[in-house]
Image (cartoon, rainbow, N blue to C red):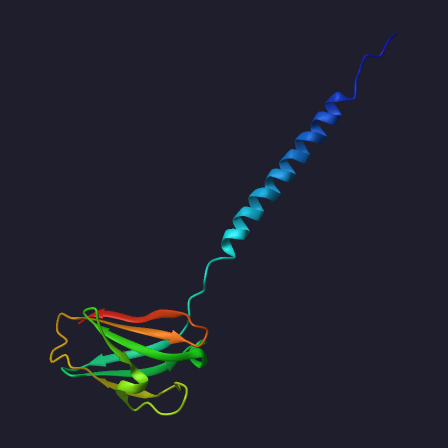
Length: 134
């Protein structure tokens, strides 16, 4: 009796498993490489109220409040500059929880206007903190 079995089925299975592992590693490296380039959102809480000429901002806190450098306001695409220099109620070098800031605007009526508050952070990044059509 002669045995004609070969080792080729075992080698074939090992090669298929190796190719699957390599392919999974390449896909994982690609996916996780892309995930590393995304930026994270900043967490700052504000409450905003308005009347005809004032925007009143109450700072509620947030994990990224210590790194908040300034807040800039724009109304219908026109920038009215940073809150630090254009507002009343801002004191010190950082924003604090419970702080109330009033920013006077040359806008005589906010009705129907889009108001955007953009936070500028110490790491150079910026993020929209508040965006409303009033």
